[in-house]
Length: 219
Image 1 (cartoon, rainbow, N blue to C red):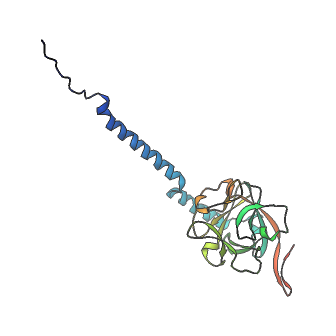
Image 2: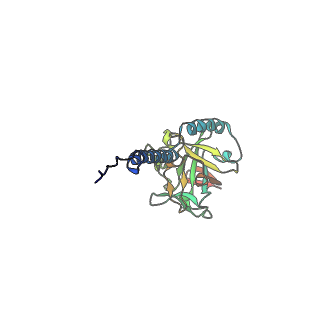
Image 3: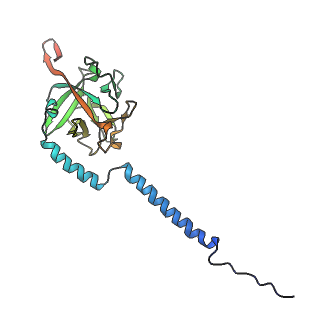
């Protein structure tokens, strides 16, 4: 009766390949997730490009940027939603205002121009309050209780080739005011590309003036 010879495991069978295969898939997965993370935040060259853009914007002048004079009252209509930026009576910021409502103070913002296309915007929703400036703070979100003096309540103006403006935080590079399709505000730190969501059309409402009888907008 012949002896049965046992077969030693082949170096080419699936068991010996699996650790290497799993390792390859794992590396590939890490690369994939790394690429995804890169798209979620600006990289070094995005910031370099933004810096060059800021230099050009600093000296840019046009009929559009000239509307951002101190004490001008403006309405800003978001390109994506077709609705106006507003601060509601309930203290909420959104882009859901009806642009035809030109007398609605919730849609009105008074400009302070600091020079070099750096501006601040104070809401007229609460006209007697002096601390209702739009501001991007350290949490990366848009607030309405800026004091108009700190860099957090200042924005860089940029005019697009098709004559919209974007509003980028002066304190935090590549943080833009932008809106979702439903008009809600996107957290500025998540908007580092100048897409249509952060494009605004500008409508001149009038001039803000203080009078003996109180303030008013002169049209």
